Length: 357
Image (cartoon, rainbow, N blue to C red; front, top):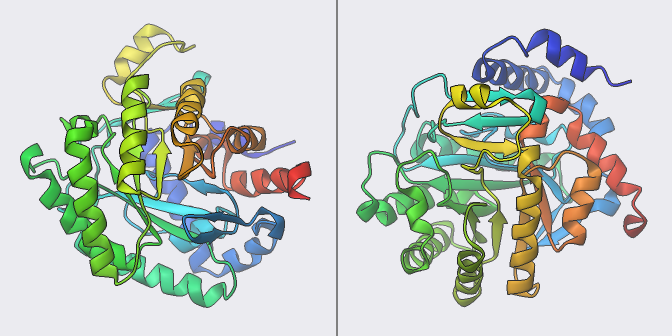
């Protein structure tokens, strides 16, 4: 019998969701800082059979932690000790910003979902860059073979006008690319006004080209570049983004971000309405995320990496995404409900799959 669901109900369910997140994350980092993470790692390290190749990098597992949990690079080493094959940090913006007013994070427990309107709260690229550099060096020392991978997700500062968005993204790219294993351009969060307008291919193409060139120049090497898209795009827009990614020779697409839709929820309409605006993540996003993955797979024909995220809860979910064409899979919301051994449990079950033996 698993203990964490009971612990979650007793310790966190009654608490403000953002406060509970901060306490839980602080506890994970404390385990690392006191040295217990190295002991824990003996039981959480992914099996060698799970090694996965993607955009020139080797990942110890195809399963990683999506952006949003560690927004500022404070706990990369600690999170990798839990078994994640990669940790995507962010979203990070060119300027430090507090995000939207609290409360801004809400649970829909009956749907195993979360609604957030955090608004890219972070310390800014200049402050986060040294943390990434330190974490990357530490992982290289600790894992002389295949080490966990660090992804960096960048977005637009709220105070910056859309017309100046490219310059703002370049600030982040130049600061963060040298310490990033891969870089993600986030144009799909619903919590920065107007941001999703950048998903239009006429705007997105020049933006991605500029970011890619700036990142490679700053790092002195090719930094794999991906774009993260929303589940709310039409099928035609998804096809357009796929064609653009191929034309620009991007390294991959991450699908999907949170959704603004509120359909098919078990939670009552009054409860959902009380949460207000924001992006919905978790189990209700599973079907649409799969649909977008299938659409991208058909449109790209396996010519670039696809990272699937949205509604991933179990090893069966991860394997389903891999079988459907994903190269890598990410999760986040279920981490809040499943607890610290979630990734290790998924890795153990993935390693038992016939294709991994």
